Structure formats: C-alpha cells, structure tokens
Image (cartoon, rainbow, N blue to C red; front, side):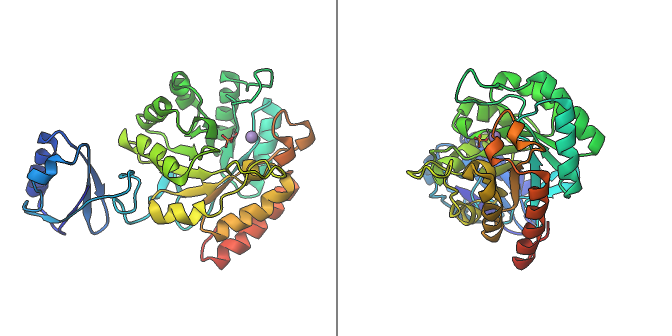
Length: 337
Ligand code: PEP
Ligand code: MN
C-alpha cells in the first residue's frame, strides 16, 4: 500500500502517521520526491482495513499496490532513481558505460584493459575476482589478490570498480576493495545474499537470472530495497530460450517493460546476452534505443588468451567503435554518453 501525502504536510502530522503505521506492526518506507512525500507500507496490510489511514491529517490518498513488488515500483517512486557513485550518476540522462574483462587475470593485463577502456571514455571498471563457473575445474577467480588488483588499478586510474559477490561471507572483504557489488545471474534468487547486500551501503548491480521472469527479477530487487539499500541497478543479461546459436537471448522487451514498472536504473549486458563478440555492438545499440541506462561489456586486450569468456569479449579497437556508435544512438533518443 502506498500513502501519498499532501504537499506541505507538517513534520508533526507525518510523525503521527508513521507512529500509527509502526504501532500496527507495519514498516513504513519513505520516498521523498521533489514535490511529494510517498510512504510505502510493508507488511500484512489487512489491519489497515479496520484502521483507515485516509482520515489522518496530511494524507491525500491511500493506494493499494496490486503488484507484489512495492518499493521497486513506479507507484512508490514516480521519478527515476538516480544513483550517484563518487560523482558519477547512473539512471540520469547519461548512458553509463561499464567495461572490463570477465575475470581479473593478472595485475598487468587488468591494468592494460582498464587503460584501454578508460581511453574510450569509460569510468566504471568491471572484473570478476570470484567467478561462478559451470565446472569446478575451471578457473575460479583470483579471490582477494584479484580484489587488491582491482582496488589499486581503480585507484590509480580514478575509476569506479564493480565485482561479483557470490557468498554472504565474502561481502565484508569485497566491500573494503570495491565500489559496486554485483549479484550474478546464478544468484539472483539467493535470498540470503540479497538480504546481506541490502544491509550494505554499496550500490548493487543485480543481474537477471537466466530463467527468471521480469516479476521474479523485480521481487529479488525488492529484497535488497526492503533491507534499506535503494541503490540497485537492474541488469538484463539475456535469458535461456530454445535458441542455441547465441549463448542467451537478449530480452529487449524487458528494458522498456522494467522502466515502466520500476523507478530503478536498467542496464544491459550484451556480452553474456549474446555470447558472441560480433553481436555485442548491435545488441548494445538496440539496448540504448530501447531505453537502457547503461551497458556492461566484457573487453579484453587479447580475447584469444582470456581465461574466461574470450569469445564474447571485445578488443579495445572494437569497443572504441561501439562507443562511437552508441553515442549516435544515445543522441537520437535524447541522451548522452
Ligand atoms: C559476469 O558478469 O561476469 C557474469 C558471470 O555474468 P552473469 O552472472 O550474468 O552470468
Ligand atoms: Mn563473463
């Protein structure tokens, strides 16, 4: 349920209302917009049928939210959420470019890739230190050594860093080294992990599970917001279909659909969505045209030598070309890169 307050409601009236909501065993979550204050009420709402809140001074209207997600919904926050990370905004007019290798492989190669993407105008650097691999015999990531490399390279080049967290036990460690926590597709419904990242103050990139519906995706985001962390970026990264030519099928519909349903920023990972470097650029252009707020792209200076996901990694040269073309599409839809 959502309670819309009248403009200029006094702090006193607001306080009384919040106290009443809490006394009913419900949790009020406040969304402070430019013009309006909206209170989301979380919990067993049935008690409100006998305790109507409409009568409270300051309450303009009470709207039931039919969708199962509340805090992530547009009803709760009509304006777009813009996440500010060290002065860089995600979800605003600018398209955010995030790039780097699938995995951090060594200090030298990570630095070379970071410098290459930075030259293309990217200031958000990705790279996995804990890798979710299908086979236990595949490279599992450099762990803490990789985090240290990410921290040093990011610091030296003045870039924002993103890495995946797979286990709640690693959150404390990862937080010390990086700026943004990524929840991978395979962990989208790892609810304990979602709750734990929800307790941190770090922005979170939540990737869509490869077999998840849009509704399930938004419910997973709801877990993070429900813990108090509203800095969530949703990432469409392709879903499994009967098609095998591509690694996954980019669900382009999901971009405008989620933008309509939720106030959270939506980005696209065209690398995992296609699995083929030759499709990454067109998938990126389509994503920006469809309203994506950013792109998360795998880049490697030597894709043929990459320990993971080489076939979908762009060379710096191809990435440079992509950025130029993304700029044109962004301009066509009234945005900037
Ligand atoms: C990744 O971004 O490195 C990754 C493993 O992606 P996903 O979780 O989408 O498969
Ligand atoms: Mn990868």
